[in-house]
Image 1: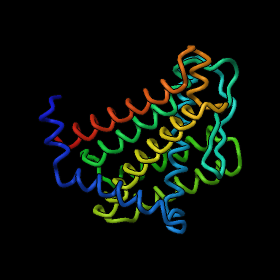
Image 2: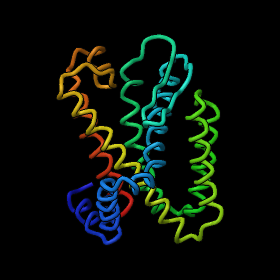
Image 3: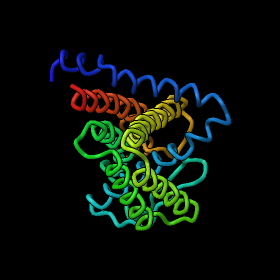
Image 4: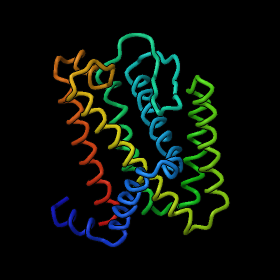
Length: 230
């Protein structure tokens, strides 16, 4: 992948529309009432973050105990034993990867309606299998039903817009979480964040991990858009 590939992909009109959707979303966040519209998408990001932890725990042989998602968009994954570096890093890296996957899905041969329906079904199954608190399970199933309804009844053009909007919101929520993580690391105040857990495991400052995950998320975004639209 060359610089020319990146430039040609990011200068396309449909990619500029992605950027425009992101910019409009940032403006909507400043309006309290309109922020409610974005709330399910922020919760969706929290679920993806925690599901990434769950898969990493399974990959590294840890025993999973439960996943909790709270109304304030925070989440936690409980397990037996000491969490390793892969499990800790999986949340932010996994969310960025999933956002990139959704971007690539918007230009794939798969029908947008089928894509939304598939995401909704898989998301609902994951919630039933892993979420252990009432709010998290109810919210997750509502999101899953919403995705399935969109995939079942919307015309292809509108389903494509919903899929694109979901992709942009996932990426924005991922960066928003990472920026909060960097701010926490810079403050020096004790906070049980993933970056501080990594500091305990590796003796490398939490700020390094927060910035490293931000850089990696940017690279994933650039790569996914370039591959999808070049």
